[in-house]
Each structure stands twice: as structure tokens, then as C-alpha cells.
Image (cartoon, rainbow, N blue to C red; front, top):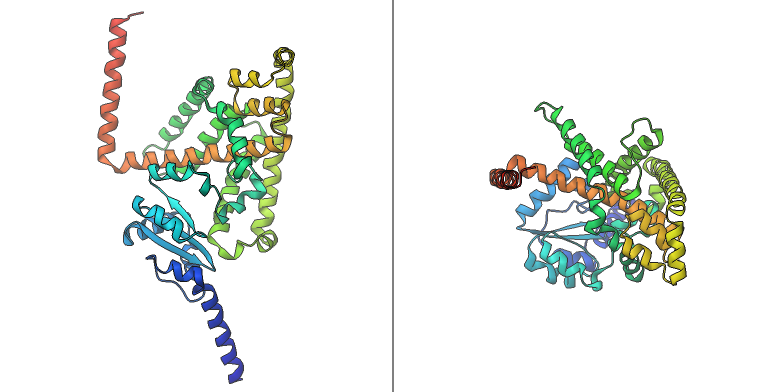
Length: 376
């Protein structure tokens, strides 16, 4: 019996050494970071709620002066906040994931195709987004980016000002109804940004509460965010085989069915509408022998642009589905996060509040000057 216990202990120690003292781990230990747990590394430390995880990252950044390591089961991540550390860490840890928060450094990295590979975490998005702009790389990423660039021209965005303004007014009314009580703004802002991106990028309205499909779609989008977070913090769910067998994996499959069916129907209906509205323009372009001039000069919205590109065989139906799903997620989630941080700054930073007041006063003076100088 003693021999068996000793063998089990030795085996566990071997697993610990294999996971936490391999070549990658030894390199990672040169970076400051929180103390690891036996075998599990830092895995147990991130198994917390979203609020606690957010606070944990800020705490580690402060404690370890802007750069710290995260290591669990040979999955490495280096979080960098100091701009001068960025270049060194990229070359020191070629297998690590590096998060950069300085805009100037982000520009350096993203403008160089040498660093276009996505981290392992991005594979979690594959069942949802397939190979859209967020998850693809190399020539496919460059090609899709080129096709979509003109969809975000200012002239295109101007067309949706009324839609954006209407959703903004609804957002203000919802916030006013809180009557000064504490409220979680994330779901409120998500509702606003999801409605806005749907109307501007896809040409469909989700704010109509009579649409059961729209409500199911919104709910599935929100639930997918929760599912992705739970999979991220639970390291044992990272392998696809285990995750697909889990309760979360089965729920994800149901939500993705709703999401993909909804966007497929929107694309199908928009394709029919585009064929009716643009048939004469397409004929003219075909006679000129250059269909590409249609959507380059027209500066179409994103979904229309993709459908017009399909006529040129620049993208297929699956590619359109990938990009629509990608921008529905990216467009609402990133904007919601930015607005959340904006409101947090407005609430906590006195300097920001002062600057906002000065800006409002300047705008008001300009407005009054225009009224008195050019009365209607």
C-alpha cells in the first residue's frame, strides 16, 4: 500500500513538473506574476465572476507594475501594459498571447502582418463566426478587409444617423427611468448597440417587441457571451471534445442554431430586395464590363456591399454569413464595452466631468452664434 501511495505522489509531482516547469513555463517565470497553485498554476484564480475577474486584472497590473504572467496547464499568456516592454516580450515568448493596451503600440503590431496569428482563445469563436475577419488571418483576412473597407466610409454612416439617433434617444429614456438607482448598464448598453448595428449593417429592426425571432436572436447573442466567458475561466472546458459534451456545449449549439438561422433569413430577404432595387444599375455595370464600380462608387452598407461583391464572385454565401455574424458580434460588443468605460470615467473622474462641461459650453456658444448670425 505504501508503495502505491508513493507511486501516486511521484506521478502527481511528475505531472506538476511537466506542466509548470517545462521550457515555456521556465521562460514565463522570468516575468513577475501571482503565486501559482500546485499543478493548476493560475487556473483556479480566474474561476470567478466577470466583476471579480475584471478587478483581478487591475489588481495584478498594479501589483506587478504593468506586466505580469498568467500560466495554466501549458496555456501561456503575457499581459503587457508598459509600452517599452512590448517588443521584448513578443520575441521572448513566441508561443504566448500578448495583450497590448497602448494605442500607439497596437498600431505598430496590427500594421505588421508578422503578428497576424490569433491566440488560442479565438478558437472558441469558430463554431459561431467560422472564418470571418475576427478569426481569419493571412490572405483571406486581407481580401475580406479590402472588400469591406468602403462599407465604413463616413458617407455610409451618415445614412444611418436617424436610426442611431433614435436608438440613442431610447437609451437615454431607459437610463432616466432608473431614477438615480444603481443599475447594471452592460445589458442596457448591449440592447442599444445591438439594435443599432442590426439596423445599420443588416437593414433589420430588433427593437420591435412583436418579433419573436428578433427577441430569440437577441437572447441567444447575450447567452453566447455568457457561454464564452464561462468556457474561458474554466480551463477544463478548453478542449473541444470535453466542451461539446458539457451542458454549456449543448446550450451553445442551441443558441448558435437560432443565431445562424436568423442571419440566414436576413441575408436571404436582403438579397431579394437588392435584386429588385438594383437590377437596372447592375445591367448598366455589366454592359460597361466592370461591376466593381457599382459598389465602389455607391458606398453601400455592409450587407448590401457583401451581396454586391457576391455578384462579382469576390465572396460566396458562406463568406457573407461569416462576416454578418462577425460584425453583429463585434459591432455591438466592442461599442458596448467602450460606452461602459466611458460612463465609468464620467462617474469616477472629476477631470473628465469638467472637460465635458467645457465642451458643452463651447458647443452651446457656437450654436447660439449661428442662430443670431444666420436667423431663419
